[in-house]
Length: 315
Image (cartoon, rainbow, N blue to C red; front, side, top):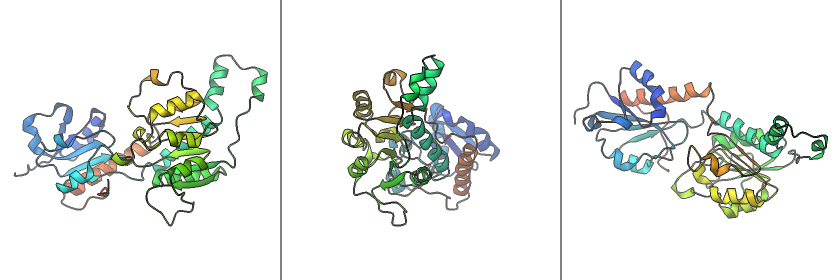
């Protein structure tokens, strides 16, 4: 098929509509997946995609000229990378750009949950503060053990911040990293049993869905805490909720959920829990940088040059 003189970029989700102005400034055509006409499918050369949203291969098969999927942010778990590579479709992301902001958020969730900061805030606002509450002490954080599941850019940035809080750090991931300054535990269960705070920072894929299982949760235990800033699919959410209610897990801090937006009713009576609406990487400073990385990869692709940040074929 002859390619049109002006390439067409498909936005895969309405949340990506803010990209329209930048795409128009480059002179590219814009197509929207939620209103894509059959006649437009053959003109789509690239997709701008929110990487955690499922992008079905059946839909991609209907785009015969597709050559690039540019994911916004680091995640690309909604994209079947091997399938794309086998068909000559490049996949890019923005790995590492938001690591510092997500790591800050992870530490914030840890502090808020471990020291019962939100519970104290509610106590004051609801007029329940009595003098004897000062004697209801929370546990000290200094000297605790901080376990990291997945020592990628976010995991490493979080570990460095935890070390600055005088926490002892260890980690586990599927691949050794000899240059890492912290010890790698033999396995996930061993790391969970060792940890006072277990941070989930792994890249999600089909193989590690539900990896933070009931067994892992119970290994962290009634005095421990789990913080998840990766993907909701990594945690057995039902098991987590039950463990918090039963006291088999001490605390949890969640920025990501199995279904997003998550239903308020699901969490209404779950104790010792701090939640945020998948906002760990959403800062005023990082959003323009993420957008520019997407635009950079699009420009390079349309110029026939190697993209800047290709995703590994090991999805």
